[in-house]
Image 1 (cartoon, helix red, strand yellow):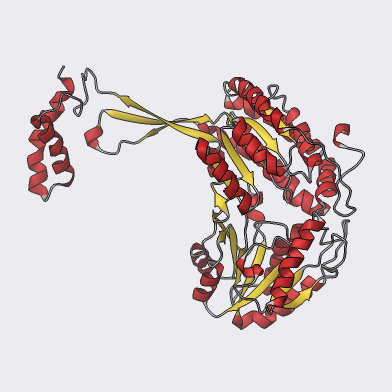
Image 2 (tube, rainbow, N blue to C red):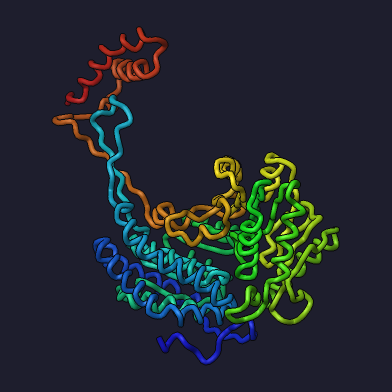
Length: 517
């Protein structure tokens, strides 16, 4: 584990930085090396691949404190956030996918669609793509790529992984973990490139599928680059997520849960809460509890703190710009924790805005920092309308004591994941698909849906009719054949029962064609 520790780190709390960069010219050869290794890896049984990945899980378990420290030192997130939101989900991922992945890869029969195709049997076969590229972000630099790499490898793929430039040490930790799995040489490649170069290099270098987590703008750029190759992508992009607080919500739980989802990881979570919609009947009571808890949040860099530093001064300045725009347009600060957006440190206060409108960044876009807006609503219709007004549709939540009502309300929200009396945490559930709609991206990661993204589907159709010389629709054509095929249409959807019955003799005659030479 000594190799994971370097003389200098990037730590947002102290603004220290360390980085090494490859060349884009290296990428095609690395992909080709992975492709050769994948040919060997893909021939192993699922059980053999799973046993290798279990070694990686044991390595992670044995070194989890050191890796937690690496995440903390490079990303700046508090140790508690690093352990609970990065390490624990990763430790849950391998047992889940090694158990559930095998049946997901098993070929399966497809039931016949109609008795008229009695002689055909279809079977679905799932195959690895080959070599997949994974580009992961700085906000969850460990847990996001970890589960994707695990799924890709278990499915039989080779992997090229590029982590965020701000967290190279986390990437090297991942490299060490997967080396412990004793994979074929070159199957897993850890890539250090600037973010602007990695996507184009992966696409032009020949990966067979690309998984990207990051901004919506970059996601669109990658789609354009992938289009000439018709390269499939999974894009997990931004969010401006809404929480709906119903009139019957448990205010203590709701205030605490929303604070965690809005401000953990210093608000730098695409699935965190940015818009808080509160029923007018409880607005005053909620704000009293919520604002009091926000003011009590403690900034710092140790165990007894609630808010760590932001990842960079650039990110803090971007969030401050959004806040200033909101304030210039009439928003007000209802509460904030200790700290300031105006100083040179990377610590920023958790901030609650009120009197906001749809022209402000807090409602119209993604702020990606420790800022949330509270908006009152009168009834469910208004709450759903406001929640669905964003172009982002990643996550949402409903807070209510009435679970039946909450489920009905959740079903009306246009979001990839809706939680009841919780928020954000579903990303840590291995069994739960993750991914949104609209500007929040395409495809899924995690769960059965995410695992299937690592596989391509082949259909094998077999003709099982003994002695058949042809299919009835093959050449040579004739008027007799045309009328016989027409009998199929009459039998399936002819006007009335009599028409369908009269089609049966013609069906029998046309079916005899199966045995004509």
